[in-house]
Amino acid sequence: MDCNITKNNIYSCKTVYENFSEEKVDLDIVIPDYCAAAVRILKCEVQPVINSKTIDGDRLMLEGVCTVNVIYVDEQTGAVRSIIESTTFSQTQQLKEQLSAYRIKIRLRTSNVSCRLQNSRRISVKAVIGIAAKVMGNAETPIIESIDDCDIETLFEQAEFCTYVNSGDADIRISGESELAVPVMDVIRCDGCISVSEIKVINDKVILKGEAIISCLYTAGESMSDLESVETVIPFNEIVDVDGAQEDSTGEAECELIGIRCDISDDSNAISFEIEARATASVYNNVRVNLLKDVYSRSGELKISRSEINIESLSDNMIFTESLRNSVELDIDEARVADVVLKPVIKNISPGDSSLIIEGDVYVCIYAANRDEYRFTDKAVPFSITKSFSETAENMRCEASVCAKNVSFSMPDDNTLEFKADMEFNILIFCGGRFTVIDNIEADEQSENTCFGSKLVLYYADRGESLWDIAKKYHTSVEIIKRDNTLDDSIMTENKMLLISGN
Image 1 (tube, rainbow, N blue to C red):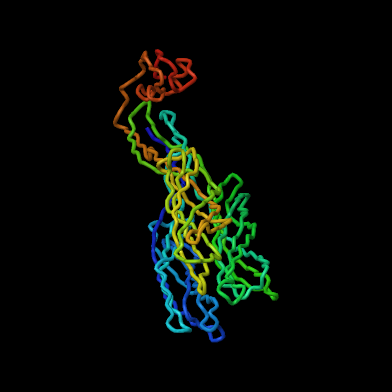
Image 2: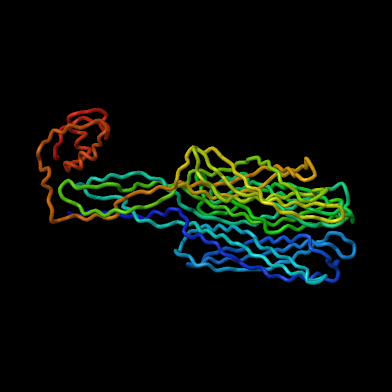
């Protein structure tokens, strides 16, 4: 007896690489002669950005730039000034598998920032950049698609799995302007975030809708009390080309700020912005496949080998906003807070009772004036948000990003700062499943079926018993049992005597 087996490969999405590495920053900044010299460092901001991420064979190659913004006090007038310098970095990381289709996710964080004034015109900056890299791609899994043999009975189970289609990048350039009531003397710092609020997939394209939020710290005069801030919201629409994207696909997108350029208008009553960002859109499809769960022959024994496969289905892509309200204690006496910047980071997402529990930290950057000097304070505030979700499971996996919008603050007393913001989350939810499947079948030519022959058997079936199990036991087929007993269902709905024949 020959088994005419047709095999196929399915390509299911999974995380094939995850690693954390560090890159050191060691930069000497020289203040040029045409700028005011420094007498004291107030704050040093280190902002890394990945400009290029590619895979060549089994190597992940990253290239980035690290922008350092040093805020200092002018030794001549005591005014606040800033100077910006950039340095590049690159990394090559070894992958365990080679992929034809992949999605690279990078998360950056900065730690151990040290900024020292060597002399009035030379500043030494040291820091460590943490690089969390994740590569998602399609893993190839062989399965038995069909068996062309009238003697063999097969039982297939339908399963759903997620396959990665493709991704694409697009450069975003946004311009805008903030009109001010008072003339601007100097722009101290520009910061912000960019987020996607709506994703639409059409043929070979992903349409993104979102907004950039730019916070600018500036001085309106020479005195310490003239430190001010302004926030500008600029909407954008972007089209990302993604080969293979279809209208029934699920799209995921994230945006990353690369740089912000600020200019003061000629009459000093406005600040114009030129924003450069990058959008990455990925497309996934949920595919249904029949997995071979059981098989038997009506005339002979079969040699069967089984294996376990793990496949994930894409459960949901959730874009939602949650309000956050909290407070921090200040160690600044008689402080006048000019600006508050919130930078949220997600640390963990875990399933709860019909819900998702999202935990993380919000880094609160406070810019304040205190009598005759400026103060800059960073504080980490933990947050925990519970989001209702009906399909939680222990083997759930989430990919998430978050952005803080509509930030406002107040000071109920001299030492407490209360802030509130809208936290915009973008979470892609995968639910995994483990299946035991038959991966190979061989006919045993030495054995013959002596269990049944051509006898007739009266079998007393219990309610809920499967006709598949009965047919396998007596080496017949489900269809024959249904025919001989005038049955419609494959599961017994009541206790009943069945006639079992071999043909």
